[in-house]
Amino acid sequence: MTKEFPDPETLLPLPTATFHILVALADRDRHGYSIMQDITARTDGKVRLSAATLYSSIRRLLEQGLLEELRESPDPDCQDERRRYYGITGFGREVAMAEARRLTSMLSQARETGLIPKKM
Amino acid sequence: MTKEFPDPETLLPLPTATFHILVALADRDRHGYSIMQDITARTDGKVRLSAATLYSSIRRLLEQGLLEELRESPDPDCQDERRRYYGITGFGREVAMAEARRLTSMLSQARETGLIPKKM
DNA sequence: TTGACTATACCCGCTGACGATATAAATGGC
DNA sequence: GCCATTTATATCGTCAGCGGGTATAGTCAA
Image 1 (cartoon, rainbow over the protein chains, first blue to last red):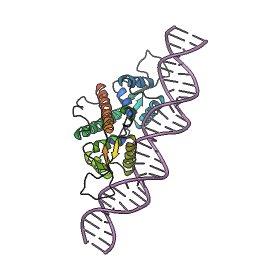
Image 2: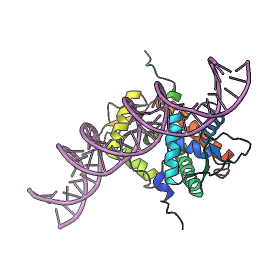
Image 3: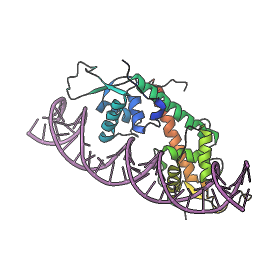
Image 4: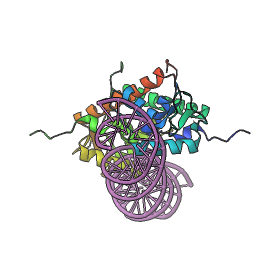
């Protein structure tokens, strides 16, 4: 039985926080706090998710099927029972791709009108 | 006397509608309805601003100094007195550039983690 | 054992997006 | 000349995204 997912386009534009979360989970599964740290590190401290934004976003993403909660820890060495691990789903990747195309298109339009340099 | 503008970074992330409006005004001054039409045409009908979004966004952009209202019509042939013309300010261009850098950076991060193809 | 860090979670207020609605002038076909 | 459509600006009410602040509690090192 396959779950029904809507057209990825209907979820756009993706909230900024959401896109950062999907990027953080793209190359490996992570727990909530690790997602927050990864985003801070990757953006050189420029983007800092508050706890409220992080967990309300995760909750929504689980409901929409972009993320899934993993049953067991991917790191057996760590026995911190509080941690809940999350992974990106195939549908989540589809939505992220659609959002990336939208962003690329916006930048392309900004170049066409001369708002930003072409080399950017 | 120079007006005081905040650091462009503090206005980021820019609302989606705002960025589209700045793109539409980058190469020429326009009145409200023309902005709406331009966005629809440029995005191939994918992005359609509602009147509420359009005029509330314009109002905010005027208050923040990203747009300015023009005293006289740039097109003397047209005597439609209803039209109100707007132009992008130097500060508006600065903010748009900062937003473009932010978007570029997000896409770059998405490529690094393999969320989206590198050629995108 | 105390304080800093890790981890998850919710309440509340602000802001942006938008459907619906209102108003009215310009336009074009018949 | 008349009426429908398009052009044009504007507001109201609602909902969602987001973050500040706060709460709770386990982990870990000094």
